[in-house]
Amino acid sequence: MPLYYVQNFTYDGPGSSKMYGAMGAHNHDQANQFTTDCIAYLKQVGCVNVKETGSFASNQAEPLQGKEMRWDVLQSKWVKA
Image (cartoon, rainbow, N blue to C red; front, side, top):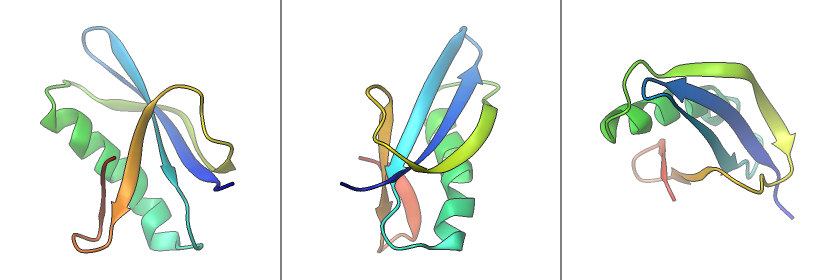
């Protein structure tokens, strides 16, 4: 069973999203980029004033709800799964 990065976000609307992505092999750069790419995705789909809430977590079980991201090797970034 894979482990996940998990981060919560809020934005105007009001709205919120839990984002998560499978960790795969330990990669510090991918971990650091997770929050940045999630914010970029939320802004791309029209969310305004996106802010991270709570702390970034790694080694988590798969959340029951949320938006799943996946690491795109060719683009070297997290994208919506």
